[in-house]
Length: 242
Image 1 (tube, rainbow, N blue to C red):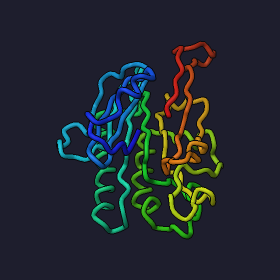
Image 2 (cartoon, helix red, strand yellow):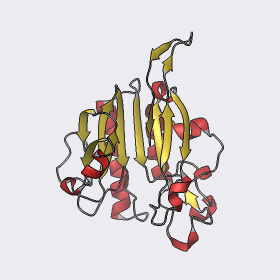
Image 3 (cartoon, rainbow, N blue to C red):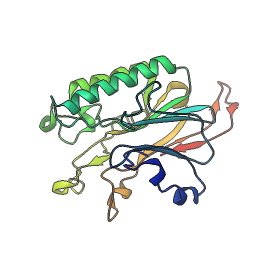
């Protein structure tokens, strides 16, 4: 979960735990905030960037589920090109890249997921010509995301749907959802060993039709067993990241 906008002791923990989930949360009043709900406890939970300041924006949390590191991020929006918020977004992406380099390696089964606030390619934008160079699609943002992909990630949506035009976010204004004027800015990326386990992925547009919806739609991926070349199982587990 991203953009929870609530300090940890105000998070609606009891309602979610009543459904059988374990929670790890990292939030702040009125802004930002991330959380992970899982059907079994996570281990080695890390909040924020290691060594980061206590006053830093609450935008990243991670933990290990069945040997798989899951990193949940809410990448800054960036405001407008040339603004302080845009500069902060680029610095934050640099810090994320440094964290991956120092704390992880691409041989690990690792997933990074959440609101990236970046549409990687023109196929992920309803009108590339209209939005050319704007925040969420600017070249510096896309370049930072491409460097992260080259670190060792697979965009799971594009793995399963290489040419499909579909979005995960629509502005509340001007009937953008009804006109399907959206962007694909919510992502689940995985390292190769984990990507090979992915069976399917889809964006649940129906959730966006709710009476009081988020402006984002959930992204859901299912993973299955790892198999050897002779199709015998290495691991006998399956799970979903949403």
